Length: 613
Image (cartoon, rainbow, N blue to C red; front, top):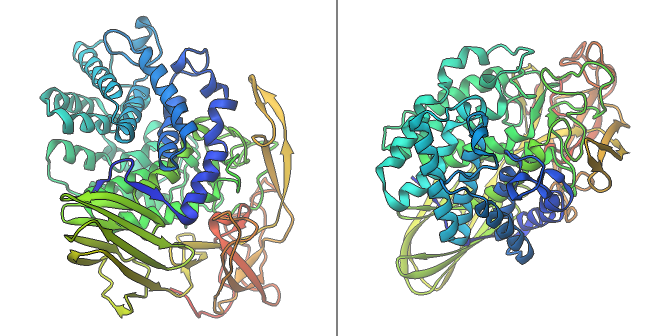
């Protein structure tokens, strides 16, 4: 229904531009300089990892470079793409392994580099990259037909990811063999609906079909198939989402999975790869269906779960985040996590495993790429601060969205056209809005407000939404505070303990060392049920600042009796011993969830029943 604009038609502005610049100055923008698995990868002729890490990194680094118009980063992206294509073999095989190793090489990496080459072409229109992608898919087709390779493990459970580069090529050349290749992949790939029952009861067991990243990716499988094959879309994604959310949902719109599904416990983890892949699936599903539920889910994840797992300077990240996270200390014994290690929730270079180190970089750039979408009759607008330069008909059009959303709930769209041209400006109205006014006039809360007209010269449209902060009951029976698309939490003051060391030939040193976060303030509280009050301030240059957030809530909180989880002294129990107030309420400040690196998000109700839903 909707389509991405060309890679060079959108430019971030405001806080989104600052966030992307911080990412470029942090870990994602420097991995090729400091991390052996990127710097010395087999993809470019080195001896380090030659599977998913370089493609994962490029999947975020390429759009980051071009959105920022950063010449040095674009040059470095070109060098990596050039080195990968230089090593493509004569028969089209593109992954860094010898002919005898192909049968045991998991072709998930083949799918992933295909996505990267397609993405690179949207920014550069590179004929060489397109040819390399085409030849790699021909090779994959031949080898699958001959039975020389088959799908197994990650390739089997991520088969639909390859339909994205296949679809890119098919749009260009309309060759039937591409559709036949896609059907072969589907036939050999995992059938996710057949695993639904296994998602309902978390197990302390690692499996592909309960792996949270696989499931985050999986949600888009029907949409990409229907887009490619022209099949009727039956909205299986919604059915699958509902099951995952009911049995594994979190207060911030993600699913627990550390790495595999972990139930609704607020002290279990969610893998960062799962966060960014869930964002990407929501982006694709919104574009494919036009259903605003996917845009709503995208915002909830992007504005809460993503920044929560990243340090302010974006030099370190968590592998697993917890909704109620009172400490990030390496477990001396058995981790609380079902299928992850003792350091998974530390902030660092590659806590637990390096996939998230390479993959988290796609989150913010791809969100920016979706700030505007192309519709058949015009342009679909979010409230993100960004600028679109495009051509409608034969007329150059610029649309600037000037806002501080989600920290403020208004946006001014400035439309400039080279000459009069008719098109629709489709403004999405967030589902949380209690009221929305366009140019001062109230409008219906029906998902979109569309202005279809002939635009001339420069015109402005102002949108203002209103909301009231509220307490929302979670599946655990506890409550969380929300305002607009933001979830709020009680910040627990943290002491950062720096860990510098070397492991497996990989050095951790400032600014990409590891950190334990030790709690320095009390966390045992419940809501007193009184009103929540919004406080707005200027904030600092860091959009999701853990020091000076630009929006906070004041809430009355009562101390309650709450113990550590059995067997741990750094993890709170899922539920308090009692929800009854153990002392007098005091007014305390709640931070946006993404700003509070240590936090209590789900808390009991220990007072009056005002302000709840």
